[in-house]
Length: 207
Image 1 (cartoon, rainbow, N blue to C red):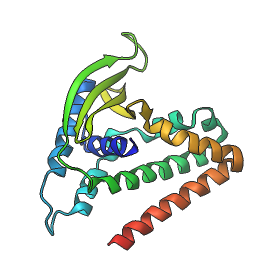
Image 2: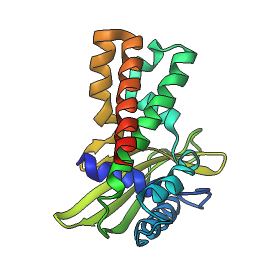
Image 3: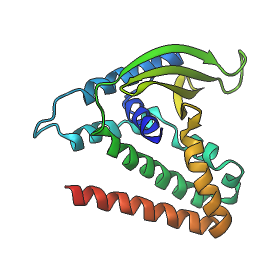
Image 4: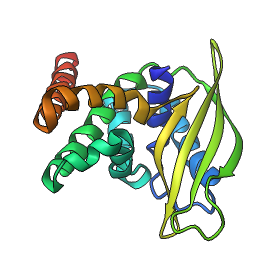
C-alpha cells in the first residue's frame, strides 16, 4: 500500500500552479500532467532521473509540507522549537521526495478515475478543506486513493493522501512518535538525517 500512496504523491506533485477552480480540477490537472510525463519513453535526454527532476521542481507549488508535518506529528509538533520545526519540514519533505523517486521506475501505465469531490468544511469556513476521491486501475485490482486539500488565497494545496485507509501522515506518524518518545526531538531529527543520507547514497550508487 505504501507503494500506491507514494505513486500518488509522485503523480500529484507535478501541479505547476494548482490554480484550478475546484479541488477536483486541481487534482485531475496535476495527475494528468504527471501521467503524461511518466508515460514518455526513456531516452538519454529523458531518463528516470530527468523525470524525477521535472516533478521535484514543482513540489512546493502543489504540496504543503509544513501542514503535512503538523498533521504527522500531531501534539508532538509543539515539542519542537521554531528552528527544529524548520529542520523537520526540510528533512521530512526530502525523505518523501527521495522515497517516491524510487517508485517512478515502477510506473506501469495505471489509469486513474476521478470519482468525486467532497467538501469537509461548511461554507464560509476560515480554512476550507476538501477531499477528492480517485481510483487507480492497478493490475492487482482497483485502489482507492483520497486526496486531502485545503484552500489558501484561492489556491488548493494537498496536505495528505490516503490509500485504502492508510494516509501518508499516518504511515510516518507511528515511526516518528516512537522515536520522539524514546530519543526526544534531537533523536528524531538525527534519525531523519540518517534516513535521508541513506537514500542519497542509494541514488549515487545507482548512478
